[in-house]
Structure formats: C-alpha cells, structure tokens
Amino acid sequence: MTKVQRVSSDDMVFKIKADFLRALSHPLRLKIIDRLRHAESSVGSLGKELGVHQSTLSKHLTALREIGILQARQEKTSVFYAITDQDLFLILRPISELLRKKFKRSNNLLNKLAKGL
Image (cartoon, rainbow, N blue to C red; front, side):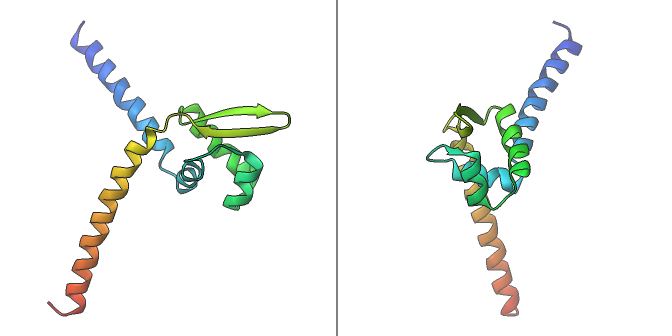
C-alpha cells in the first residue's frame, strides 16, 4: 500500500467520525436522542412532546437514521423510532461530564470576580 492510499484511507476514517459527530451537533437531535433513550416513540408523539412541526422533526430523524443512530419501523400508518445502539450513551455521558466540569470552573471564576479577587 502506498503512502497516498494510506492517507486516503485515514482521511476516510476521520470523515466518517466527523459525519457521525456532525449528526449529534444539533440541539433538537440531542433532544430526540434523549427522549428515545428508554423507549421507542412514534413521529407524532415525538412532535407533540418536543413541540416541533412534523416536517422539521422528519428532517432530523432522517439525519439520525442515515448515520445509524436511530432505527425506524412502521406499524400501520405510524413510524416508530428507537436508538439503534445504547452504547451511544457511553459517548454522551463523558461529554456531559466534561461540560459540567467546564461550567463549574467558569462559575468558580465568576464567583471570584464578583468578590473582587
């Protein structure tokens, strides 16, 4: 394998990772994932619970399904979505913890500034 082929292969791996993370980078998509954490839900129920129009919701559900985060099944006239792999939360939990620490440090700094230190 030449160096050019290896770099190209490495680049593809990073592109796949970036596409996956990009799918997670929208607040509504994270809300959808959180809502589906424990149980599947129909598109109609998701729309009502999240307060979004079905067209907007469908766009985000499609993006999450295409990247493999969600799976869909149809039952009569309803489409139900569920998390494909619960290991997704093994990624999201550390991110939440990092953000919690970041905001705690920021809060500590703001408190010191407020005290004039």
